[in-house]
Image 1 (spheres, rainbow, N blue to C red):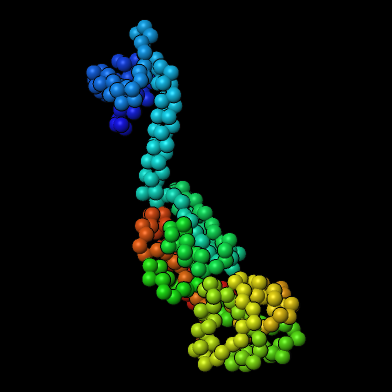
Image 2 (image 1 turned 120 degrees about the vertical axis):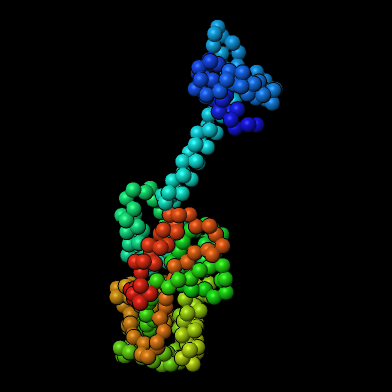
Amino acid sequence: MNLQHLKYFDVLAREQHYTRSSKLLNVTQPSLSNAIASLESELGVPLFEKKGRNVVLTKPGIIFHDYVSKTLNMLDTGIDTVSKISKGSGYISFAFLPILGTRYAPRFASGFIKANPEKEIEFDFHTSSGITKEIIEGIKSMKYDIGICSYLPDEPTIEFIPVANQELVVITPLDHPLAQFDEVYLEQTQPFPQIGFSKNSGLRSIIDSAFKRNNCTYNIVYEVTVDQVIAGLVSEGFAMAVVPDMGVLESLPLKKIRLKNLNWERYFYLVTNKEAYLTPVVTHFKEYVLAHSDPQETIY
């Protein structure tokens, strides 16, 4: 079925007159007649019937025109949307860890919109899982366009670009033996049971690596995915933990202890799919984030 023939049919259905329709379409009347005849032959039903000097839709023609009209409108909308995308407008699916949702990630989205007032930019934010692995899987499946999360090893199709960092600290219940200190070495935590991150969390490999680099081991008695939940468990006396420094720690009844000579930080990375096409608006947003971020900025 010819798209041009459908457009001819739509105009004739509205105008109900061959001469007027052919002039609007800038085609000869025989060409218009042939197009309609071709559609009728393909469908096996008459679409128009004569009514004086005009033509009107038959019952099958009315039904068919309803579908054709909707289809052409959807096609026009799609063309308009893609045209806007090519000019830098469009939709950005942006995923990030919940800890970045208070100020860090929103400032980039807000700043990008303000920097491009002439463009129609719409964000869809994703923070529900709170897991780096889920964000990476979403980037790989093209569910998300771009994200900010921790690093995961063995992800060759993902581009990781550091944009900020977070210090690691020790947190303990208030009555813990280490709570008397304001600073400790990582090896001082070894004798005590700890709450660790689950293996599907990007932080697990980071903290494992920190212990390994300092020739230390740690005894995990609970595994939890979300850092804020670990902080809550520590405050209720379940065990101590090594976690990123974050604002929620100041509001909980626990002791936060700095790590001495650790020389190890958690980095946040801007992530995109190396193998996926990035629309102009996503590419421009990526460039904006990189231009307005600093890997040495510490997030709390």
